[in-house]
Amino acid sequence: MVKAVVWSCAHSDPDVNNERFTWLGKFLYDIKPDYVVDLGDGADMRSLNSYDTRKPEAVVSQSYERDIASYNDAMERVRHEFVKNKRKRPAFYGFEGNHEHRIKTAISFDPRLEGETYGISFKHLNTNKWFDEYHEYENGDAKIYRYDGVDFAHFITGGNMGRPVAGIHHAYALVNNRYNSCVVGHTHKRDVYFRDGVAGKAAIGLVAGCYKGAEENWAGQANKSWWKGVVVLHNIEGGYFEPQFVDLSSLERQYGGC
Image (cartoon, rainbow, N blue to C red; front, top):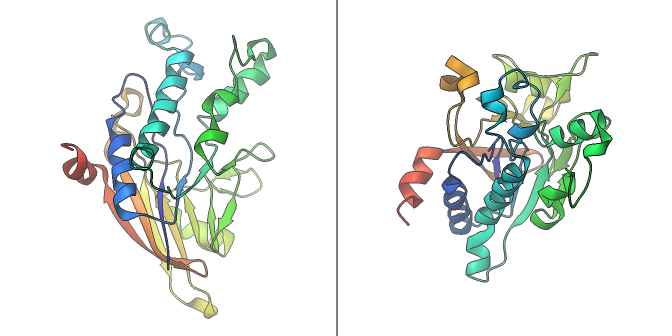
C-alpha cells in the first residue's frame, strides 16, 4: 500500500533555527514513505512582504539573500540522510505557496528587480533541484494536482470570488467543494473530515497545519490555534487513506538529540 508524508507552511526564516528540518529528514529516512508532499510556503520570504513598509525597524532586519539561503539550507537538511547513507530517497512533490509567490509579485510590480545574478528570481529557490515535480501557480492561483486519487494544493478556492476555502468547517468544505479527497495547508490549522463510503465513494478532507519553528509577533492569539507537525498518509488507495498526525514536539523528542 502507498504511504506518503505531507506538510505545509514550514516558513524557513533566517532568524529561526532550521534544526526542525533535520529532524524531519531523519523521520522520512526511518519510515521510508513512497513520496512526500510539501504543500508550499516552505520559504517565508519576509524580505518581500508588503506589510512592513511603514516599520523601518522591521525592514532593516530583512534580507532577500538570507531568505533564499535559509530555504535552500532547509531543503538540503530534509534530504541529507538519504544522501549521507547513499540510499534512494522517496519522490518529492512540491507546491508553490503564497509566500514563494511573493517573488513573482515583487517582479510584477517592478520588473527591474528581476535577475538571476544580481536581482531576484524564482529560480533561486532551486525547485528543479529539490523536487521531482513542482507545481507553480496556475492562472494566478495555487495549483491543484491529484496523486493516487487525492487532490493536493496549498489552498483550494471556493465561490466566484476565488477566495481560499477556510473556516471552522474547513475540511468538510473541501470535500463538499471538490467531491473528492483533498489535502491542503495555508491556514496553519489542523482539521480533518471523513466521508466514509457515501454513495459508494469515500473521501477525506485534510488541513495539514504548519511546520513553523517559532511563533509570529504579528499573529497574536492566533499562534495558539496553529498546529505544528507533519501528517503521514497510510494505505492510500482510490483517493482514500488513514491519516496519522505527528507533531513537531514528538519529532524533537525523537531526533533532537541525535
